[in-house]
Length: 348
Ligand SMILES: NC(=O)c1ccc[n+]([C@@H]2O[C@H](COP(=O)([O-])OP(=O)(O)OC[C@H]3O[C@@H](n4cnc5c(N)ncnc54)[C@H](O)[C@@H]3O)[C@@H](O)[C@H]2O)c1
View (cartoon, rainbow, N blue to C red):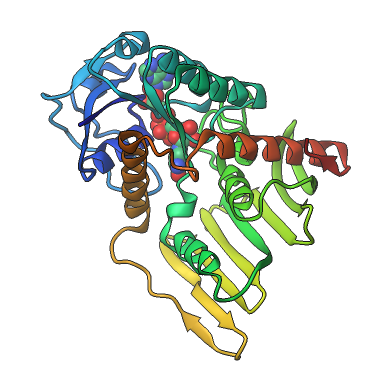
């Protein structure tokens, strides 16, 4: 049995806790949270932009800590699952790895590339796994696209455009603080930066245009250049349109087909603007069948099953691996630099 200690019981900590209940072979054995009432199981004030609302939980079989180091010292814990604010990820991950724990850390891996490198090095030195919660490739529409691409039936990947835009999250206090959350580049677009790295490899150059807020990117479009001739772009950021809180999608070009998908929450209604669709070379538009159930909760369940499998078999999951997550941060940093300096930036 993989015994998990969740560090930080906020919105994501709760989503992970609920998802672990569906993972055979893993059990949440401990929780660490600085808000004492959450350690009594009172999660009624937790809510996010998806998943169930928080409720009163029975934590009688879970060890509770209000001090992170005390949980890291618990010999009964195999895996530390970090759902803390991003600024805390690197230090806690490195401390956990040094204490012989495996680490699963929510995205973004860290706010600085140097911290990501430190985390990867700590995992190598400790001979423990470091996995990062890049859930996007496991979302049903994105998992479908990856499956179609990997099957090879429609030929090679030629490029794609990716979109992720939210209304300004005025309710998130630290969103626009570079040293706490990092704005939409590291909180939001990091998902597509990781996906682009996964699908196309590491870009050699990025060129970004758009708007800034202080020293942070606010809304932008990036062109990604690769060694091969691929046409890849992404548009992301926040706009002041509270009536459309969330919007994401893609258009992926293959030699013999194009994959389309566009989803948005408009008003209170979540809807496909374009359901996952293949446009094939014969002029047909085929709609893909998506699994039943809540797509977000399904994706987190799949993610945590993959984490448990990766650690219990010792066969490290590449999609969730620290190397790709670190590269995603490097890509985002280069995009911000390109936007601020108004020039194309080479990635080393
Ligand atoms: N994968 C996704 O789709 C997704 C969605 C939302 C958030 N996230 C990520 O999850 C992480 C957490 O985000 P969230 O929305 O759950 O934040 P949150 O603020 O709701 O939760 C963080 C929790 O950590 C606790 N905490 C902070 N410092 C602590 C400390 N020193 N000791 C113990 N507890 C401490 C806070 O009290 C809070 O309860 C972030 O990295 C965020 O980017 C990922």
